[in-house]
Length: 220
Image 1 (tube, rainbow, N blue to C red):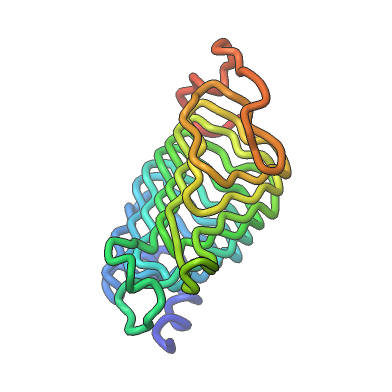
Image 2 (cartoon, one colour):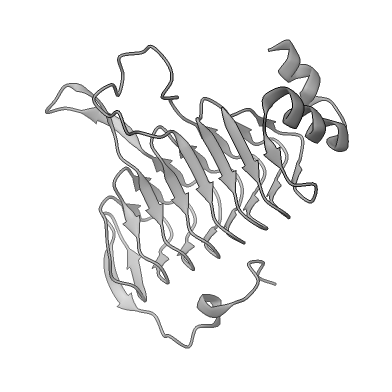
């Protein structure tokens, strides 16, 4: 813990080197972490990847960010590592407590990502707005035990503000999840607007929409 605290206060160029040398992280020289507490088991950041100020990422096996992926400020990212002695989730030997953010994808600010199981944000996708919750674990009342399932957000998707996404949910590529929706199942149909509590397909998206064909992740 003292080594983590010492590393946290280093200027970024020195902190990047310390994170690589002391913790074995893989951080491209063009990547950057702000004033944030980022200490998963493994960390991989490709060229241009960014993590904003006041974000916390702990108790994870892995955080992997592809080229120009962005994790904004004030996010709270937690998990339940697979290498511990706790009896929780022992019935899921293939579970991975990990966050994957694809190329040029963005998670904005003040969101909660529970990565007890894998969360994957596809390339060129946006988790927009504030206060969304991605929850991969809960109590299984039938089995009377903690259970978990992964969450998949497809490429070129847009996730509106203040949503709840539960374990096992899939948002298909080239689709939109409306603000304040509850996504609690796996969908497969692309080019759809999903919304409501629980979310369902409520409309079609035009294939002319430029968001879904952009070559740069950042939207001006």
